[in-house]
Length: 245
Length: 277
Image (cartoon, rainbow over all chains, first blue to last red; front, side, top):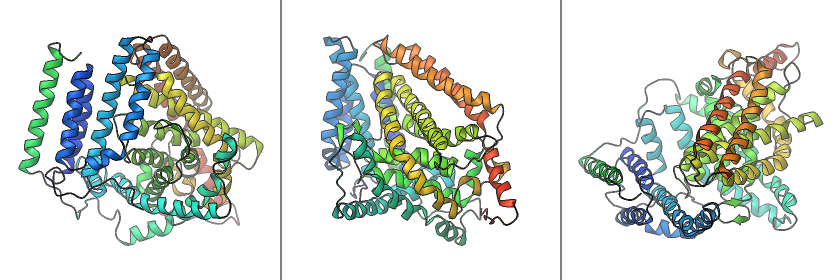
């Protein structure tokens, strides 16, 4: 089982430095929050989806289209109720729904174009302490293994008659215990061996680290960052002179 | 709260952060419960883990819960809201061991649920930590102007508190003896001087509850009385009470729990537990 969202494509977006992609993600989040008018939000949404097209990762967006639609409907209903039950509430809800969908799509594009190892090295290069970055990258690497163990345990327990679909809410919740205990025990008991293995290989021996992955900022990153700054400035100027509110 | 920084010196704690985060994130995927509102409300058995991680692994459990939730967001829902999720889940793992120390000050502070009193304490810390986690995330979502405070608070609080309250005690009862045998309790790994001492612990315990209840009441009150989710009442009012919670966490310390374990180890005939770095 591989729950990773990364799609191995040979595009210029994939080749960008992970730091540039992180800045792109943050800038997209900011752009999504500059305007409140649904028409302007739709333009930003179109730009983000076009970027996903350039990165050839639209197949991952198709995977989450159901969630995107449900979130949009839920948001519009919530804002219809809390916005006074009028047309203004619906329009505000549509705007917020597009805003949320933009951030989810941007996050999905980032994850589809960035390897887990690149996320970790990007964090370290941005000044996050190495041990924290190590914990994040190790956890990311272990998720497929543990998820796969969990699936196996789930199938084994079901084959022994565990029925997760019957009973009231509390009974259903309690039925997860035979699944959670083995997952925890099988993982945590390796802590001491894992720690010794790390230390025997010099983990923490030197405050300065070297890395196998060596991401570098290229001219491509420079162009992307320049376009990004131009877009942000244009958005803020438009908002300041009264558009998109 | 210096232990949340000093713990990174210990390889075992770093590994525990990674493993707890991986378990939390991984259990979200195959054990996805039935959805009540798709994409928003579902039974997530993994929600039982943060409080248990916090009680067993202390600050490593808090970091593990925060990173695990963030990794969970990496599977399709990475948004600005993930920042609130990171901080909220950090406190969901942090507060249980802090408040537990205040509940059992001067007595046996083992984080097991082998007596009725400890079970009650477990339920209390689960409700408290779930409320703080929900208040932090809902406040952040309201600051971003996405949803009213009360909507998200109710969804997150009940999800965390019900799952944590129902499954959590069973998990803790099953895990505690094993984790203790393996020498992986946070109180066995950290040194007393690496953990902050409590200051006015009783007042700290009182303040953490006042801050939590205040944040919830203020958030729900101003959330219901305004159409704007980012109304100053919610943004400033809830933030002030959350600051009280943070100050209270600083006062609650945790060194006494480590010292209690050290004293237990020094008793004649008691087995020594190695404190590996």
